[in-house]
Length: 70
Image 1 (spheres, one colour):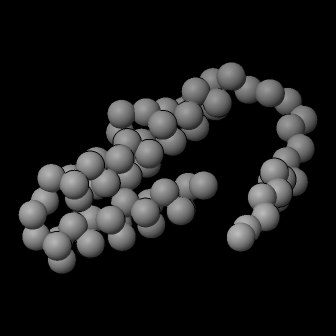
Image 2 (cartoon, helix red, strand yellow; image 1 turned 180 degrees about the vertical axis):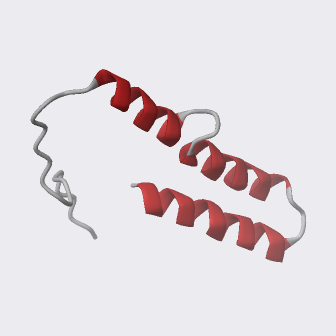
């Protein structure tokens, strides 16, 4: 059993919104060359790999990338 609390890890106070910086941040996070894309590539390669040890390593790498960004 687990308890889900929807709250931020750190407080966020935005004094001036900046659309240009927001574009850069979102492209690094979710763009084709971003961290989420890299994690998805590792995890998708895991399922096409027949070697269980290599599949485990790919899973560990993919999940570590996701954990670092979430």
